[in-house]
Length: 258
Image (tube, rainbow, N blue to C red; front, side, top):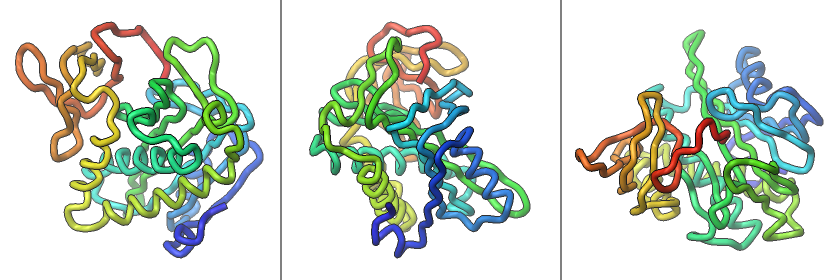
């Protein structure tokens, strides 16, 4: 289920029927000395998680994948890989559904939206040890179903393209990642990644609320700085954020899962 270009670039694939978490499987492979460029995919998870340790519902029919990268960059640059992964998600969804921006959009820092409803998310974690720095990118894509009763809109790919399969999405995702990552690895490669991400950004130029640990801040989303931090124009000037939950408008939903 990896395309020819991904295989030629050295990527490998392990498929499991059920795991606790594909990210934990990737971490286990790292500790066993795996060299990286490894996709781990599960048909279901029983201990999936999202950002801030939130539980991630993982029923069969959707795609649950983690990508292990070993020594991909200096640790300080690792957050940029979230934008690479976001673009890969967008590329893959566009390929299998035929949808394009603005219906298909990227919500900072880690969600893919269709018509404003979340259909995918990603989680990036880094780990150092034994002279190696690894990044694990966990990606979940709603293909056959989505969570119900959530405080935010959710959707799934088959609602827009009924014939989409897990195999097609995985192949598209792995191909898109290989292409975007190769661009990012070039000198100055984050520049075109940043530009492409902004072309697909949800809520750009609109009022949003960011909720970092220090408290909610409302302003107009005006872009990303050269390092990828979100730029928010507020009544007291431009503020930058490298983490936090984003909400459309000025209202903040307390403890909304992502």
